[in-house]
Image 1 (cartoon, protein in one colour):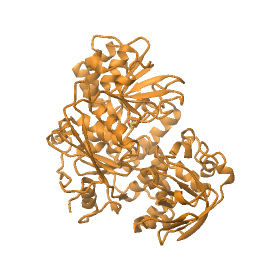
Image 2 (cartoon, each protein chain N blue to C red):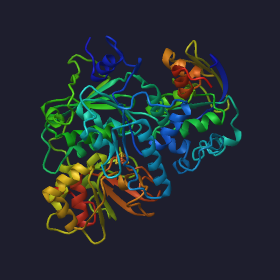
Image 3 (cartoon, each protein chain N blue to C red):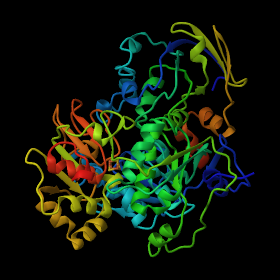
Image 4 (cartoon, rainbow over the protein chains, first blue to last red):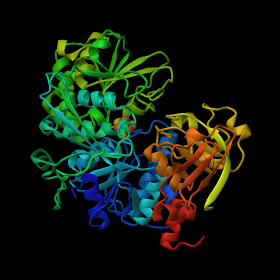
Length: 417
Length: 166
Ligand code: SF4
């Protein structure tokens, strides 16, 4: 009988012939991601009573959430993490300024087809864009993985999402995934492994694929994957130097659900406050007053995202009533954007450049909102209180939509910018 | 772990999120489990913390525990004395956090057969939940999950695996 991607990876990792959804397997993950929460995780690790991590090459630690430290408490946490890294001999440590964990981990060669990656962050499924099986876990679990080198995983049911059609101009992977989440809802893929497929997905860059897998978490997915192909191999060349075996789902695998979309006529999409599945075409909210715009995060902080924004903003200036925050997802992306002149274009148009990292995404620093304020952001979550005040409003859209809206000071349709 | 438990029911609806189980504003300010228990379900049911008894059981609709991955949303209920949660479905990371903190959870439709204040019985060995309105079945825990529950959670389980004595 045919097997899905998740079934194949987990069976191989567990050393079994085949596995079925619902079965529990114990595996040794290839990588364990932790970020600023490593401070808490390292304390939980010590409480288990072991001195050394089971495998220091398994850990990838990226400081990104509140970087540089916004207060003494954060600074103390970062210090604790640096001490833990030194004490345990963890080589894959990326300090302040390298970028967001979900961008840095693949850039540094820690994600590859067929890898099993667990991370103490809910957007860990992002690495499915490279053909890896990647799932979020809790902090106690991360500590236990450090101690034992193992984790139990329930083999998920799988959903196939097939996307057809050529995307219209100014309509992007972000609009596609917002549309899908609006349709399937916040629990539409709960516990499931999501396989994105179809000619639209094949035509997407790695950046666009990462936007899809990143946001699959917003419909409850355990993991999400895009089958590796020539695009994947080209991106990984020079980054992943060891051999790997790609895993492809069997054509006759069993899915709990197969959903098809045609995006040939898709309009730019917006998620309205306060849930990610509250999605409408941009035309329904055009004219909504905004105070702050944000381009960046692990969803849309990559070169093509910054380029899309610069193409709209170049030689023009944002509305005086709006602040535009731009934060590249990593140092590597910042360097490329500098070399291309994108950063000068953005800054000249009135953008405030922030260092690579999560920045305002989680409401801890660098652009918190006051009660009553409205932000239009390229991030993945718009929950109440996420970016500061509980009485603030967050809309989500693509980089092009955010750039067009920054010019006008109100939510605008990028097709008309 | 007991193989059979009977307890008084607190019944709730669908999509109860981790913010109303344990508010985000406390996640970095409260670290004592006993204090966490005093804020359990604060924004959903203010009467809960005053009237909950050890051994009570929460029964709910679909997607219990959606939202953040915060473990406090499990710990606060366990500390408040909740013996088990029975829901139509659970958010994935919440499900894992329950197992890893040794709070038994059962996925079935018992919410259809019971009201708050009534009693129900969970038979873990038989895989049944008996309510005034009927008997509901659920698949038994896998041996791996059962072992973590019996060891008292993931931390004691890891200690046992690693051969660490108290
Ligand atoms: S950018 Fe935002 S969503 Fe992404 S990892 Fe950072 S805080 Fe989380």
